[in-house]
Image (cartoon, rainbow over all chains, first blue to last red; front, side):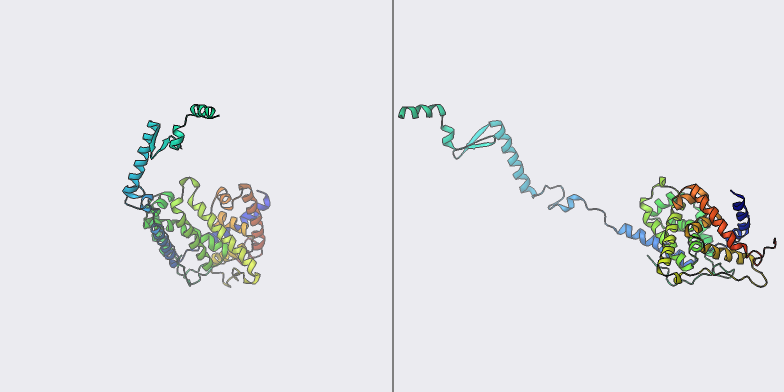
Length: 124
Length: 220
């Protein structure tokens, strides 16, 4: 602190003491308004609805899959069919053979490429 | 926000006969002392719905916030608005307050200081004529209330300082805060605060120097 700063600080000391001696105090109605704001802000915060649970947004009762019992049954049946098809390798419905990932016509199923070649050769 | 409304403007400096919030703050402050809990704990309690915690926090902090705003703005009504706004921000902040973020008092000082600086800036932008002058007091002929006259002269001289210098002086010499806390409020370094204070004291001393005799100083 320079001599000038020290001199200024000493000269101002009684002014600062006088300023501290009688500090401004908040009026009563301000304190009431602050407390009213506190109550209002707390109430507003509590009034905000909590996020709804996902299951409530889904149709049907809680714990039931989408689509109800019919949907669940169909899903299970499809899963079983797929499982069985995977084990069996192929099966036939109305002349159409189903294999894992492909469907062949019954005529294609019967066709033997070697025999067909021999048949064509005999015709010629 | 519940507005304070048409509040009777308190005189500055306050007269001895003026109704003082001290009458109300006093009991609240005693209640605040009786509830020896950290600010962070009280904020948690308030966020959980404890309205008594809000009363304790108000008693602890609203008078400090109001004093700073009053001394910065030189206007009671504006100081009330700023105090209410700063405290409202505190209520809204309460659920998210983290204990490690620093002292609540410093945070409130910073919020209050920014609100005051914004208002002072707006005053200048609106119209220089609209700036309410802090009343410069003529010394009483009998100098019966020298201390009040000195406080008024100081308030008037503070009003003529640049905003940040005024803020630094009010926090250091009237609120008696340390330079590190003032640096946190002003978002600057301790060295910058010391520089601000030195310049402000020199300006104040020059401003008030001519008035020393009429304000009751008899040291020549």
